Length: 173
Figure 1 (cartoon, rainbow, N blue to C red):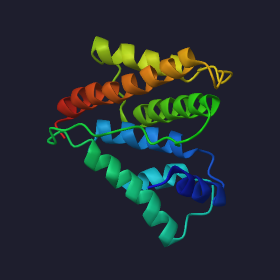
Figure 2: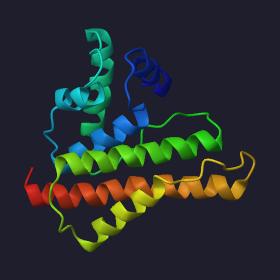
Figure 3: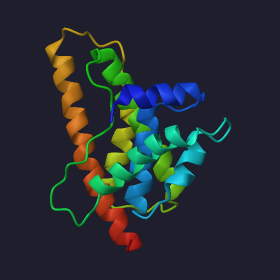
């Protein structure tokens, strides 16, 4: 599924959220409750706007369902990845990583009212807050910036697994 295709759908319906933010939100919702409903997620994405036609809605819901499958705790392989655009400059990568974190934090806040998470989860969520402030003034030819963004991306992939395991075991989903 191409990021650009979904991005054009989001733009067509004037969503206030980017695809990265929406995927972060979906990921958080599914970490809290693996049985979360894609329709509720769609409502959050397009709440103040025209709802997508069925063909477009199907593509968006497909992203949600693929994310659900990749987050399945019974699957021994962890193939989940952040849904971000490919072949973009480092500045755009920084922006979309920050947007993904914003969406994840929003999704956690809407789906989970618990405030006494394990220490590791609290640290991860604080890190995500910091990542929302990523400097988008990175240099495209700077290997250090590229390595840092790659490390953040991999950290977030692992962090999702930790949060999913804690929250899904707490709620017995």
